[in-house]
Amino acid sequence: MEKISVIGTGYVGLVTGVVFSHFGHKVICMDKDKEKVEKLKKGIMPIYEPGLAEMTLKNMTEGRLTFTDDIKQAVTKSDYIFIAVDTMPKDDWQTDLTSVKAVSKSIGHFINSYKIVITKSTVPVGTGDLVERIIKKNMTKKYKFDIVSNPEFLREGQAIFDTVHPDRIIIGTNNTESAMKVVKLYQDMNTVIKVTRLRSAEIIKYASNSFLATKISFINSVADLAEETGADIEEIAEGIGLDKRIGREFLNAGLGYGGSCFPKDVASLVHTYRKYGLKFSILEDVQNVNAARMDRFFSRIKKQIKLKGKKIAVWGLSFKPDTDDVREASSLKLIGKLLKEGAIVSANDPVASDNVRKILKDKITYADDLYECVKGADALIMVTEWERYKNADMKKVKKLMKGALLFDGRNAYEKQIMENLGFKYICIGK
Image: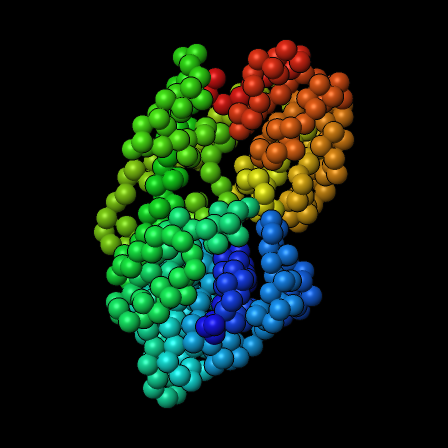
């Protein structure tokens, strides 16, 4: 059993700490937000993630997992310190390292023995060296420590599975001994472990997400051509995906990527290139394509219906299924445009309504039930492909609606079936 502390209890930190305790390690999860810590001690989760609450409570009960707002305790009582604090971008999309710097300073203040300090937060190349300098500068007594980069590759909504069954683990460090110690932490996970240089690991995370974002913008651009020529983007994607060098994943045409990772990671990598006097033209085009997705989709909506005074039902508010995260969500962009045109918006989401309510207040109606949402609606727009929407009784939906327009932003339905039910069906890339 190793003694681990995880500083920061957002998606990455909380899931990381809980899973390490699940594998038998003694884990302290630390966060400066006292209210959040008190709720966690009571088993109240700050995020929606399937399976997280149950795993948290189990490991708390069995004594392997504790929560604190005392960073001194987290530093002094552990041998491995994971930094998993927020690194959201500044206004210019440069990664904000304020929290990373503050944690590094505290580690320097309270370090009392040899530690391995592991950056789990997504940080730009060179951050590990910065963390090392800050720790050394703030030491009151000299202790040996090593810096490791261990980027996360979690998908919101499947974070527990991805942590327990990762497709790879990246360990970046310039010290072989510390690399082997971190490898040992992951010894129970049956996966590929790749040890790299510290700076290589820091780039891998950004490059991975940026490549996936590129696939999404690529297939969305192809979808535009499919719409204009009478082709079918799903047939095209299947044909492309059969090439093993390309693969089918992330070739689903839709409203573009959102969430807490892809937008900021792409932008941060572009910013890093500029910092070093380089230009990443491909990624800049990826950003431009993604930014234009909602404009194109909304123009198709406006061609079908005059929105002023019309009731528009929106299914799905989170940026993807199985999460309550609405950061950079397509739903917010869409609703903003609908309201500007004078539409009356009724929305439903299994878990994200409260987060949208914090942003939009009472500008829209929040329906508790997906069928209540569509009552009397002139049009329905499917934004997030939750299973409950894909499996809905669409015959019932058609009867409840006033109009017959169904705009499918995720290609969740079969066109012929929807048309047979009486819908005028408009989707992506067809």
